[in-house]
Image (cartoon, rainbow, N blue to C red; front, side, top):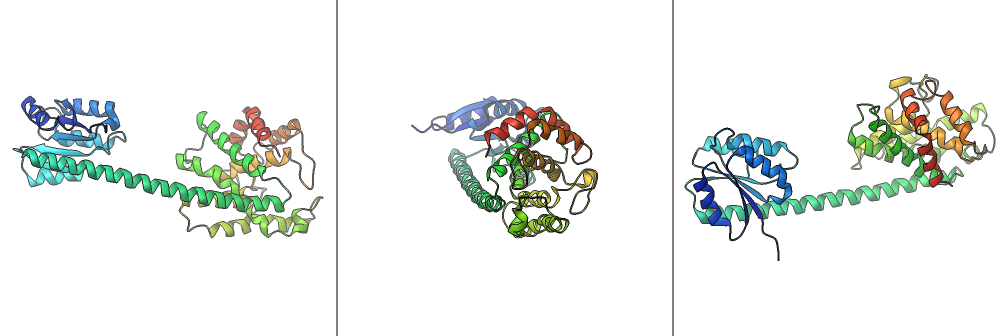
Length: 352
């Protein structure tokens, strides 16, 4: 059996609440409140269990307008449709209520059939809006999943050209995610990094080396130290990668593109200004790139490459410590070193 919709009746006059209850209780579950304060408390407590609120306008202490304003200000109750029922039959009041977010306005004395019909219509409309919102969110999520897979595939192609395992991508993404969480939990995360950035920065690091797709194989896979001229060509991968990412600007992931661009272009910058391609220093370097600068070096040191054997954990940590304040952001570096066991566990879990 389909559960009944739950209606909250708010009126300071008991007789009015009783009339509405008798009119509606055969079809709906009813809860009553005798004041705006009580109504807000009940709505916050029952949350999504409340399907609709019938709200009197003229009440002592807190009138219907203020009650509605508070309900609409809370993410818990803002989507509950509210119908004003009032003896104050005024166009000014009606317009004010609608602008505050009321779904409808019924004047007293009311016709029972009108009240029932308007409640039914609002419940159907609210149900339709929820369904449409669900469909839109599903479509957006599906699109993002497809885009993520396409981007991962592109990045993996670069890794294989570079004679590296695709696990480098997975490791760096997971480590960056954990590093952001540690910085946030310890109160050291840059305040400019919003919750949405905390989601997209780990995704963005996937494309940090996408520009290597344009680097000649004899340089990219050379099993020895690069010459000065070869290294100058290799350094161009940051700029080339940024040009590739700029072509993604049309997709529905603008925060992703922003951070991917920053990570790609600046993850070889150094805190002291001796990095490339622009020689940025300290906070001039975007935060996402500062995170990746450390994580990329950490993963590269621990991993075998065409030009070197894998370093031990002790040697890797020693190099990271030596880079604090010169290569790496000292705040990020401290958080990383304090939790190095966590990051090494991640590395082992995604080992090549």
